[in-house]
Image 1 (cartoon, each protein chain N blue to C red):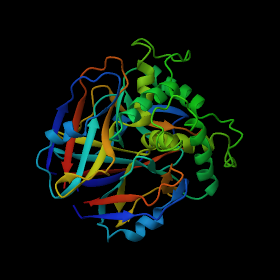
Image 2: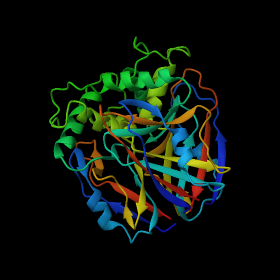
Image 3: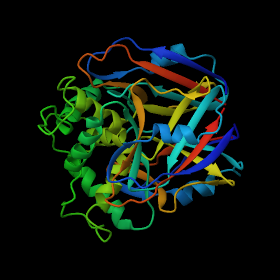
Length: 136
Length: 136
Length: 136
């Protein structure tokens, strides 16, 4: 066990956002090798690894996921918190709320094209909180 | 490495079930900080973090996932074990079979609204087994 | 921390492939208990646990996922790298890029029917790279 910290993200608008740099700037000095676990402590947003170069990928994620999990499903019974709420819960479990990433040579060892996405599924999700744990 | 144990869950009916308390009661004393990994050793059920307060969320999960991954797809070739079997395998990989959760102050450090769901995709899945590993 | 290695997989054709044996043959001697984390360093393939016995399950995965995430969505804006590219990114985040598996008695402690799938979403994805980290 090397360390643990909380990171409060700025409020992002609905959509998919690259947060790799933001997280790396907050990390303590990392061990030579180990693992970093990142838990997003929310049920209407997600965290995922995907393409870090072309912003059109993140736009297509928003479009596709909205078609896959639409807001106008008349069978939703959980609707008190707005049309975007139940779809956000569904997206959260399909995308996932945590990542575990290897550390090599004191750095996150992601693939060349991999970045960390904050997937904001609510129209006004506000600030989201991460718990980051470093194990070596 | 702090410890490892197996937990056999009671048989749950098809659907989404909160098992946070059940798991926490079985855990050994946890270290001050660390990680808990939970592996569900099955391929027709899933484990996920989602909303822990309103049971209607779990009902909507069952309805939505059944529409997303229907049982009457005529192209399924793996159908010997019943109409609910291949959809269960598909749901299992989309939801996932394991969770890694931070430990802080000797407790699982989930978000306020996060609970652990056992997602039972079979009509009669029986008792499901978890392997729980504590690392600090 | 016990060890870390990279594994370069052979090029697989598009589809779902069991790679449990291939990974186990590459692992160093494992500790009595611990965790293995496997990160796939790519954004157009995935890694998942699912049924290890009947090949028809893996065929149905390919068919179903192609219907769920079709290549002919006219709203995709990220299309320069071929019709299979944006669907591959979407599948990658739904299936996931990493696994964390318990070690018990010096072996991966998967369920009887669980195997590790390499999910190749591109028509010609080439060799894929894994980073494997052993923690105990």
